[in-house]
Image (cartoon, rainbow, N blue to C red; front, side, top):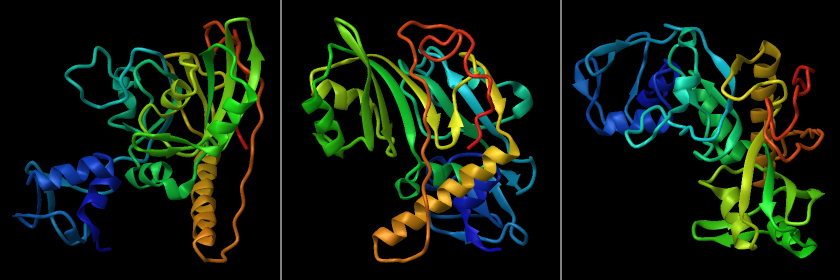
Length: 286
């Protein structure tokens, strides 16, 4: 089957789409011995595709899908000479080369997915899929209702309008508060910038859900393979989100959405999110 060369690199589990495109632009990728340009296509069953002289083939490794509880202090990157710790240090060698789906900044913690399935990773990160990410955040001070409404309505940041699908005040203390925020975007430090703009800087930020995958029961620094059911549900969420997006732009394909509820986290760290000593032992299925 003919496809773009960067997609071949993705499906071979070598890199994300953007990284694959950078390799092509750097002249590191050849098809049948000739350096290709961005946008070139190839048939991996008929053509010989090489990266730095090594043949790229689909189906070399089975797909790997992992959930990982990222502790603070780890950079979500495969390579960064300035980072003290990389997220890949936490992945057992038996899973081979995987790359993160999206990002959590160095000081944030919680759930992040890793895979060698570049096509699914790209779909999960693309705004058209509208995959929900849920964060539980301790902030300085107690935001007023008007502040929360601003976050729901949208706040203009330096890279455009940022908006939470939902934000709730979960717990109040004299000098701080716990919020639960749901977003489907994933811009750099978006949650932190939104909360700083309303005068309530983040003290601690934990992502507790990505689509249908939950953090419960996963200790900091630990990972687990997703179940077959969880992977099927993730792919279904992508399809549903893309169908909703098409309907919004004039198409009429049916679609749907589902929602989740969970108990709030507590303010101090422990073996799980922001204070659950043992976490929820139930499997994170939808």
